[in-house]
Image (cartoon, protein in one colour):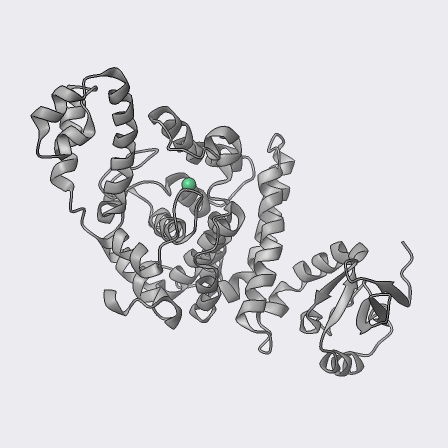
Amino acid sequence: MDLQIEYFNDGSAFKKIDPLSINPGYLTNFSIYEKQACNNQGYKFRCLLVDTSSMSKERLINLLRSWDQVYIHECQVGQYNEYLKNNLAYILHHEEIDIAQKTHTLITLSTDVVKDSFATNFGLADDCRATLSNVQRLISQAIGFISDTNSLPGIANLIGHDYETHIHSIKVGWLMATFINANKDLFNIQDDKEFTGLLVQAAVAGLLHDIGKIKIPQNILNKKGKLNNLEYIVIQSHTAYSSSLLFKSGIPQEAMKAILYHHENEDGSGYPGGLINEQIPIIAKICHIADVFDALTAKRHYKESKTPLAALKIMTGENPYVDTLQKFEKEVAQNRRTPVTAIVRDDYENKLKRLREKEIIEEEAMKRVELRIKLRDQGMAHCFDPDLLNRFILTINKSDSFNLSELL
Ligand SMILES: [Fe+2]
């Protein structure tokens, strides 16, 4: 489409952009407009700049500073987004752009990239490599920003929003990179370049840690009710799927470890390997903490979001029902039909007699799942490395945005 000097439009064909996102050192290939009120015809959009190819850098800097609200035409949004992808590092390090705007740009671009990754068939090795290289290109530009604890308010701003796989993935990568950068002493790496490589691997792992969910049937992933045991097993297979999909892409080793083992628990109750303590790679332990923290603080269709403080209390807390849980597991092992409430309540014998009817037993099966979730939510200390979890709290507390003083 030929772009014009002036448009009369109700505004729907134009997208507002931040003039600070234009890098004076990198040519634009899209036109920039200003919006003027116009009687009876909505607005007039007047072209301020066709592209920057014929302009000196000094003149462009002056122009950008003089603009407040500027727009691009919808037919050039693709070019603009591509421009942002190529200039992400510039934007994320621009002192005059605030954290909220940087976060918005990062989330918009990474959503594109992660959505593409999730949409990829992964049938061909070339597809995998192309996907991985897009993710790596994005992360390489963002790594300086997301590994800096000063960027943490950006994550805090996103706490409590609806859970979306794409946003969850970038937040996990962001938290991992920030954590590792603030706890360099955990890693025996002296070379700066090698350490940056590790940060990039961690963030890439965060972005792709749940990619295997593309192999899980949608009706299980999006199920509104509670999952049954079989469905839980199917969900658990996503770690193995993620690893086998990414194996073909040549993903670096540390990122692969994080992706494969991010659901292992310290006490061996996790999956896929049931690994314990030192058997679990440190990068996977970090991914696990970031993943659970973000999942608990996000809003899901079946639960409200928790505050960072409440989430961390669950993650650090001892399970107050540990005796009940052991009794419950023993009873279930002895008699699969034993109702749960009968075990956890005092009037065990009476309840047991009354709950023998089949339909009540089925109802109890649901309560059993609910109890498992309740028990899990009352304490997850057994899942995490206590030293790493403590360091995680100290790291995110470096930003005042999380209100964690009660925990320290
Ligand atoms: Fe996962």
